[in-house]
Each structure stands twice: as structure tokens, then as C-alpha cells.
Length: 193
Image (cartoon, rainbow, N blue to C red; front, side, top):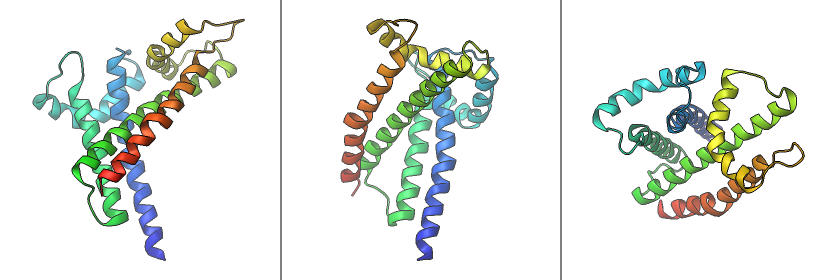
């Protein structure tokens, strides 16, 4: 019975440690993608945390077509290692390569969607509590979410001072999780056996 508790604790610790680093690398990629303010304290923190892993990769893998390929490779690697470690703890075996690839992609896609959902929800709360407040974190959140919210604002303009674009984006992202991420995870689990 105690083996189950240790297994749960091990899986929890792996998910926390790897999840936080994946989040940092993902934010670095997204911040570079939207050309966010590099001198923002939050950006500086993310760069410092991720530089030890990304700098060596930059020597091996250059960026092409404006895409930060070292960050993408690092994201896939870290996510794959997390899946392998959890699979070893839970079932004692490594997933099949094709299943591992699909699961890695599905988990990273889910992480991207969750990052945007979290940012948009935080922005909604901030707009209710303290609209117009300046904070380095709110600047970064705005820079990250604007490319996602802008098309929704064009589709449905604000009415009576209310901006419905966050609601449209949240609904769309939930549909992406249901219709794309969940089937990919199911496929990955089938292929990994």
C-alpha cells in the first residue's frame, strides 16, 4: 500500500519540477515570438533561468525563419524526459517512440493553451480589480495575449465598454483541448503501448 503513495509522490515531484522548467522555456519562446520587452524584470528572470540549457543548444542548432529552434528542441526534450520518467515510475517501462512523440506534442500543446488561458483569466481579474494598473507582469501578459485576442476583437468588437474577445478566445481554447489535445493524448497512449 505504501508503494502507491511513494509512486504518487514521485510522479507529483517530477511533474512539478519538469513542469516549472517547461513553463519557463515555453514563456521564453513565446516572449521571443511576440518580441516582448527584453528588459522587463520578468523577461530577465526567464532568460536567466533558461540560459544554462539554451545557450549550448544555440551553438548546435541555429534559429531559422525567425523561429527559436533551440527552445523548441529543449521543450520537446524536457517533456519527453518527463513522460519517460513518469512512465518508468508508474508502469516500469518506456513508451514506444511513436507514442512518446505524439504524447510529447500533445502535452506541449496543452501547456501552450493553458498558459494563454491563465494569462487571459488573470488579465480579466486585473481589469475588474485594478484596471489600468502598471506592473511589469501585466505588461508581459498584455504582450503575450494581444496576438491571440486581436483576431477575436476584429471578429466581435466591444459593445458598451465590454470586451468579449477574452470569452471568445477562452471558448475556442477549451474546444481545442476537447477536439485536438484529448484525441492526440488518446492516440499517444495507444501508440505508446
